[in-house]
Length: 192
Image (cartoon, rainbow, N blue to C red; front, side):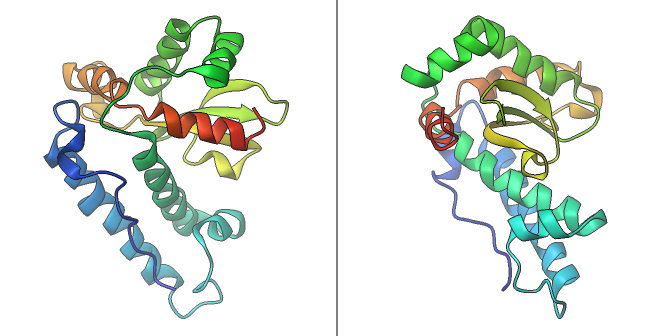
């Protein structure tokens, strides 16, 4: 089975002006597609040729694991974005307030994690095995005992120097297009 990029859940221009068509295209048509093409090459004609990304995350290491983690994380990320952001409501809002004290404190924690992330391209809101919400940096939380709720790409514009205006502007902009309905569904699926 060859890995292909999933269809985006919106048109590429739908996230403007927060995230440009060029930025989405570079990530989706460039990085995501390249990642999957390289992964297809690595697993072709091997016992892993029919494995899912989730299987590869459990059964591999090295470059294959890294590519599977990046591909899975990008796929998840596309669903974390939507043309109209807003704020979480209902059970998701209550869980954030219980875990972080307030939505504002949660937002600061996520932005700080993405800004200060030195170990991975991703910062995540996850639910741990105890049902607690926490923010982690990880190439893919499926490789640990965490249920992913929200991904923020820490390697957004200007990430090579996390304090650049481009990176700060990206973190501010991406926050305006978070798909809180998707995050809430993830939380419900995790038993939250």
